Amino acid sequence: MVLSARQFPRGKILTCDVCIVGTGAAGIALAHELRNTNIEVLLLESGGIKFEADTQELYKGEVVDPYHHGPLEHYRQRRFGGTMEVWGGRCAPFDGIDFEERPYVPYSGWPISKADLDPYYKRSHTYLELGEYSYCVEEIFPDEQVSLIPRFKTRNINTDKIWRFSPPTNMRKAYFQVLKGAHNITICLYANCLKLETNRNGNSVTQLTASSLKRNEFIVCAKHYILATGGLELPEFYFFQTVFTLKEWGMIMIYSVASTFLTLLVTHV
Image (tube, one colour):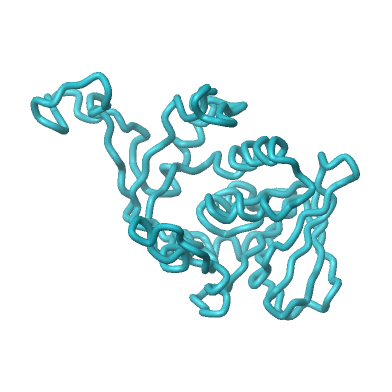
């Protein structure tokens, strides 16, 4: 089922078991994993099905160094399918060290390891049409002597890993109709997540406030909330959640990223 938040009266309340904010690669994959179960899933998407300028305006922001990065709204899409509409398909998983605590990296160290994610990385290859889950040159070409950089040898740089490229997969085209037809999934378009309300201790979310661009705020009450809004939008959203201290924000960020990207690789536009 597909709803439009533009049509909601102010104060409307939606209930579900799982509320997923964002319909990019992570949100769509998670919803697809839960399809046709007894779990009621609500997908919130800021945009519609097609590109719309007024919604895309929300992605604008200041770029500190334009030489190294273009305008933020040029490389991301605020619509069902998200930036999968414009990505180039290049993929690689995190390295093991990315999950480890390092004294020279503030707030480093995850409560999970790469080994914990490997089964989900492997599954994500099906979604992204990436083939075998392997990034090691020797595993991919066992009978050949392959050197990415001939005669280049150093202990400081790995030269035995490769990137994999998706076709690139367009998640909207691949999964919109499937999710639309699932009896337990509701897609709500034009719904911008504004705020998470917590209990007095700040350790449990009690409700989510959202709105369309018409400023018709409505409420979502769910048993579980998953923020799958992307690597830039997720920390930006948390920075506006003043109920969290910096340390709490760091831990919440870790658990949110872990829960929403279990089925994903690191993707690059």
